[in-house]
Amino acid sequence: MKGLPSSLRSKKRYLAFMVYSDEPVARDEVIKAIWREALGFLGENTASELEMWVLDYDEDKKEGFLVCGHKQVGRMKAVLTLVSSLKDKRFLVHPLGVSGTVKALNRKFLNR
Image (tube, rainbow, N blue to C red; front, side):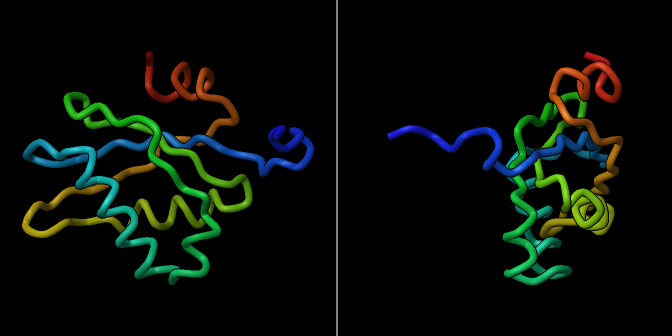
């Protein structure tokens, strides 16, 4: 079975983010906090339309990036700014920028 042709696939945008915290934050904690805020802020139906997936998170540098649908970038930025804590850990997630490719995202925002 063949995959979908590129003309029928949904367009994606890559969003870089930085985590600000006093203590180390694991990748799983960041993902859970983002999903919790997305569900609380947008609801289940709209949160499922985000097509959000965390692709990379460096726990040492506290930076990473995720992918989302190109029409949902504004909502995704709003969700990221709402993240404030998970359980007893307090941290903030700050969106750095948006790009159409991973290569440009690394070059512009993550300095890799």
